[in-house]
Amino acid sequence: MASSFSSMATQAPQESMALNELTYVDGDRKKKKRVGRGIGSGRGKTCGRGHKGKKARGGGSVALGFEGGQTPFWRRIPKRGFTKPNAKPLETLGLNKVENYIAMGRLNQVGTGPNGTITMKVRNCRGATTTTTIVSSFRYFRH
Image (cartoon, rainbow, N blue to C red; front, top):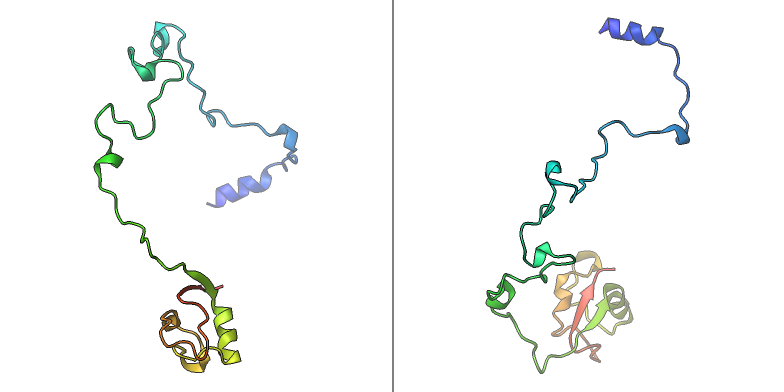
């Protein structure tokens, strides 16, 4: 250990680097494989594409999800869920508005925790309003 420190002390100070003098280290960047340059190159003739077929042609690639003619996976699995035809539209209601309604007295403090903080129970709208209904149903967000 001591010898390496002593050798560092005896070295001459290096010159400062300039951005225009920076170069890559040998082997740092991989060279692009050149194809179609004879059989001796290992990537000649068919250039690694095999013989014939759509993927061997220029610009040829199968569509996303295509599985060679068999029914693709996304068509084999069943659809899930449905859209309710009589669904009530939800309105977005921020917690800051809920706090304002409670402060104004338009909303009971149903579902408030200690210190008057709004909890998750506020989203149960049943019995949460006093004189007027603010919204029929709502989803809340934090910020």
